Image (cartoon, rainbow, N blue to C red; front, top):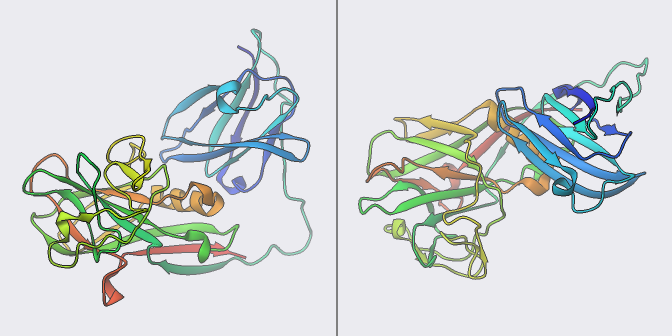
Length: 326
């Protein structure tokens, strides 16, 4: 294997591009040396024409080796690969059987240096409510949902049935392009619980899903209601036709955050959430929100949270985002 390039992509350059410009490559190697997930977008280009893009996520410490024919469906011959990363990564290209020097293999693009004073960054805060939310009710036939209901649920019922909440936020509706996210906090209010404090985790959802018109009412909506067109269910991303790849939802195995709280307000805040929201801002097509996991290792751990449909709206889920922008 011949390494064609070796470079470090720094967080402050995450909105700039670098491009592999020499050789015909058999594949690439990407390493995330950091302690948080890294979001990387690889683009195949011929001249100024974008041919194809592939988003990747690397867990902390993960290294991935990917052949070009697995990375892109189009041929990479005669093309260039540009990258975009949310944080530090190591990026290598390989080809052939002998080591090849790397001095000109990667040409990073840099912003031109001007003598004028740099623009002043303004620190701002936005508070978002969900653009959609729902609950996955464990059911072998995928018949239950609660898209328009006033609550979402996470955990396991007394009878051993699993509940998982889904939440999505339209980040680009209130955060300007190019902003740098500095803090993220998600707060959900518990309005009913059948257990004491439980560890509850946020995982990134990896496929789009729906909020239909199903509504199980206020008092007993932990049982769910018959799913309506467009609802997410235990089997479906969009009822009745489009299914999850995995029963119970498609999501990253590594959580973005976890919290155990004795308060009625559960608040998640982590560096992983900052990275995630920055990814959603920079790459809106990857934003499918979070799935909320309660303790699924026993019985009677479920918790009921107020949803975006709760009235009055003072206890709706809220996503607080602090960011710097020009």
